[in-house]
Image (cartoon, rainbow, N blue to C red; front, top):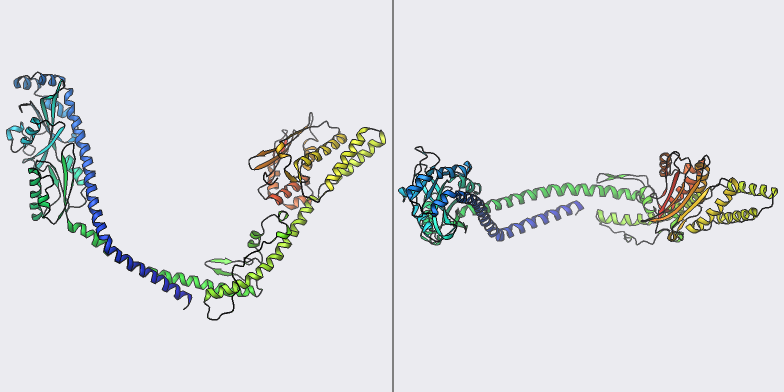
Length: 636
C-alpha cells in the first residue's frame, strides 16, 4: 500500500473505533448521569429561588419590626387600653405604617393592627375598587381569609413572622399574609398585639417565574399544615388531581405528600425554608427529563456521522499534502547526494534553500556560532552518533524507507563538508584576531625612544634609568603574544609604566586615580585593552583641556558583569555617533585606522565574548568622557 492509503486507513479506523466505543459507553452510563443531572439542576433552581424569596421576606419582616418605633402605640398596647381608646387614638396608624415603612415595589395591598384578642385597631387598604377589594377586618370573612392559621400563630408560643395566604375572589389571585407579633419589652412572653401585612403575590411570583425552566414544570409554595400559598405553571387534568392530593396531604400534616406522589408518574422535588416554614415544591413529568437524553443521543449520532465525513476528507487532503512533498524531497535529496547543491524544493509551503544541510547558509552559521578562539582545534567538531544507520538497498520500500536510506548517505557527505568548513572558519578567525591585536600603534615606541635620546644628550638624570626600565617593561609586555589574555593586575602595571613615560614626555601634570576592587585584580581580560583606552583619553579628551587634568581607572564587579571604566575630565565627544559605530562593529573602521584603539578593542571583545559585550561611551561636551568595557564576570 502507498503511504497515502496507509494514513487514510489508519485515521478512519481510529475514528470509527472511537465513535463506536463512545456510543456504547454513552448508552450504558450517560442516561443515568443526565437524568441525575437534570434532577440536580431542578433542585438547585428551587434552592436559588428559595434564597431570593427568603431575602424578600426578610426585608418585609424588617419593615414590620419598625412598628416598635411607634412608641405611643406600643405604650397604649402595654397599658391594655380599651379598644375604643385604641381605635380613637390610632385609627390612621395602619395607613401611616403602610405608606411610610414600605415601598410601592413591596406590593403591600392592606395592613391591619390587632389586639391580642383579635380586635381590629386600624386598617389600611391601598385601593378600593370592584376589582381591587380587600376586607376591612379579616375576621369578618374568617373562612375566606384563612384567619384560623393567624389565630393559631398568635395564640401559640412561636416567634418570628408567620407566612400564610388566602384566595382573593375579587382579584382572582392569592394574597400572602405576613403576621408579626408585638411583645412587651419588659416581658417577652407577653403578646400585646400583632400586625397583619397582606402582600400581592406578584412580588413573589415574579421570583418563581425567573427560576422556572419549563412551562411543563409546576412550582408552588406551601407552609406545613396550611394551604398552598401560590403557584406557577400549567397542569393537565390528571396532574391537577395529583397536585390536589399532594397539597391536601401536606395541609393535613404529611409534610412531603409521599403517599400521593409515590403513585404518580411525576418527578417531585422540594426545598424547605426553616425560618418562615415555607417549602417550595415542584412537579416535573418524567418525559421532560427523558427528552434531554433523547436529544443528546441524537446529537451524538449526528456528531459521529459528521466526524466520519470530516475525517475522511481531511485525512485525504492531509495525506496528499504530506506524501507529495516527501516525493519531491526524496528526489531533491538524491540530487544533493550526487553533488548538485543548488536545487530548491517546496515542502509544506516552505522552500528548502541551498546549504540547509550544511553545504552553506544558516545551518552552518548555527552549527559554528561559538567563538573560534575559545574552541581548541582538537575539539572543533564533537563526536556525533549518526542519526541513521546506513541501510542496505532494499526493494519494495515505501517513501519513508527510501527517505531514510538517502538521508543516511547524505549525512556522511555533510559530516565531511562540515569538518572542512569548521577548520577553515577557525583558521580565518585566528587570522582576524591576530590582525586586530597587531594593529596597536607602534609610533608610541619610536617617539619615546627619541625622547629618551634627547634627555640623555642634554643631561645625566635618574629619570633616564626609570624611563628605560618602564620602556623595557612595555616592550616585554607588548611583544609577548603567546597568550591573548592577561589579568587586570598585569594590565594595571603595564598601564602605570605607560602613564609614567607619557608624563615624562608631555609634562602635562595629569592626575591618575585607580579604583580597582581587590577581587577583580586576578580576573582575566584581553591583553593590551586598557592602555589604548587611556591613550585615547590623553590624545583626544585631555589634549585641548585647560586647567587640572584627571584620568580615573576603575574595575568593579556588578552582577554578572565586570565593568572597567576609563574616565577623563576633558572636552568630551559625540558619544551617540561613536556608540552606533561600536555597535555596528564594522571591521572597515579598524582597517581605515580611525580611532584604532577603540575599534580594535571593541572588535576583540565581541569576537571573544559575543555581540552583547564590548565598549560603551558616555560623554557630553566639556563634561569629560567615560569609556566602559563590559565583559562577563565568570569569564574572567
